[in-house]
Image (cartoon, rainbow, N blue to C red; front, side):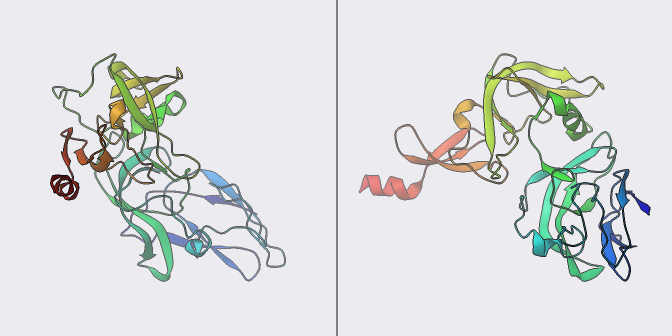
Length: 282
């Protein structure tokens, strides 16, 4: 028997989980949050349901993985943390936002948890900001906000803010050398590429205008949907230590002369860390 898995817009204030029959005498909980438009195959024989999860394409049943109730006991290590910026799959489009909390108890079921609660931005597709829950810690549902490549240009379009002042001056001009954040490593650490600004106020094929089109040293093209230090910086300001979260505004780093400083990536100013300065003066 085939069952259609539907994702409509189910917000945090609503009950996010629904039960579906899963074999004889068994129940399997599934998400009914945002539309995938994919089918789930169920087979009720001997109480051992087998099917495919719409996102992970993994088999349920004996020896399979469940990403419904109890997911946090099987996948305890989350990829993101509170404060990180991500894009969430709403079915027909992706919406950017900021993670408010992680591993949160489902208010409708105290025995269940969801990996993330996200406050979404206002974009061309999402006309108002909402607080939503993310059902699975998976790239097909939730992924980090970075500069996306040409193949994923639609993600850059979806992540673009609804309004951007045409008079606001961009930090970089065409031809400037920059560093920009791309997809995390397999271990979850940040990765940055260097290149040049190929174009400013670049218009995508759907008409959405982005601050930058970037050309990496490899020759590949990327898009920056925000003119922000978390996505685009001068090459000299790439974080000195790899991290698993959002690039911080304030960074403790080593200067060329060996002194330790706290550097502000917004004002582009640094100051010597006081403790070390006092030691040098003694």
